[in-house]
Length: 142
Image (cartoon, rainbow, N blue to C red; front, side):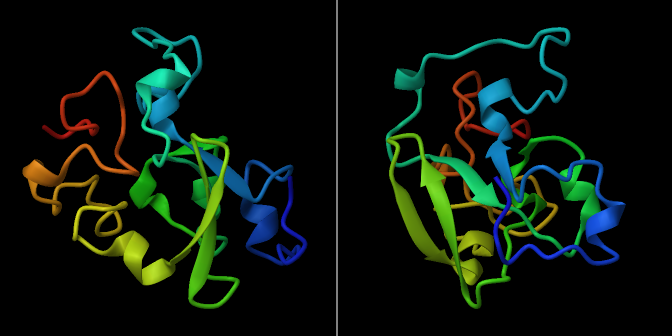
C-alpha cells in the first residue's frame, strides 16, 4: 500500500515502516500503540460513525509518523498531491479533503498539529477524526 507518488528519498529511508504510505486512525486501538498492550481493547465497526476517518496518507516530511501503522489524527496528513488529500472512511468509502481543512480547529478533523485535539471546542468532539469509542470526547485529552 504505497502511493506511487511516495518516492524514496533521504526522508523515506529514515522511516521505520516502508511498506505503506498510509496510517490507520489510532482510534481503532484507543491511541495506545502496541496491539495487545495493557488495556488495549477492541471495537465493533458499528461503534464508529460511517463518515469517521479510518485511514489517511500521512505526512512524508516527518519520518517519525511512519513508526507504526497507526497515528493520532494531528500527526500529519500528506500534502504531496497538492492542496488536497484522500481519506478512507469507516463506511468503506473515500473522500478528498483540503489539507488545510484537516488542520482547521472548526471541529471536523484533526485540529492543530501536535495539539491532540485540545484546540477543538469540546462540544464539537468526538468528530470525524477524533473518534475513539472508549472516550466521551474521542480523544485522550478530556
